[in-house]
Amino acid sequence: MKETKYYTCKYCFKEFEPKRRRIQKYCSNSCRSSAYQQRKAIQNNTKDNLPKLTDSDVPQAPHKEKISVAGVGNAALGVIAVNTAKSILTPLKNRPATKGDIDLIIEKLGGRYHLVSNMPPNIHGEYPYYDMQQGILVYFKAP
Image (cartoon, rainbow, N blue to C red; front, side, top):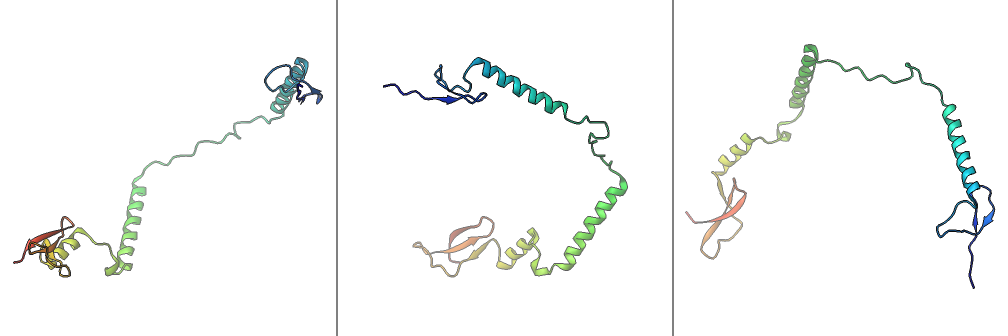
């Protein structure tokens, strides 16, 4: 027994049995053509109803300002003012460390290698030292 599936025409809304393998939208070529003409008429009507643009309606490109000596001077003064306020209002202990600060810490610790006192010596009797420049742990004989 063959089961037939009926479709509904998108133009005239009648049920029909498809004649092709693919899904059909319309029952006949005349409905297909009429639906196209209807879509085309709707598109033409919307184009005619659009308002016409004049030169004053078209947005203009923004005006680019040129670099001037006064502008550069104002920017420089602004940067100086912000940096001065930052240095005055930031406490000394909260300021970021510089390379000079790190070098000073290394000098106070006694040079590049710092003895790690909470670790025992290895099996060769060498003591652990932290290398401040490489950031690694090295072992040396006791002085």
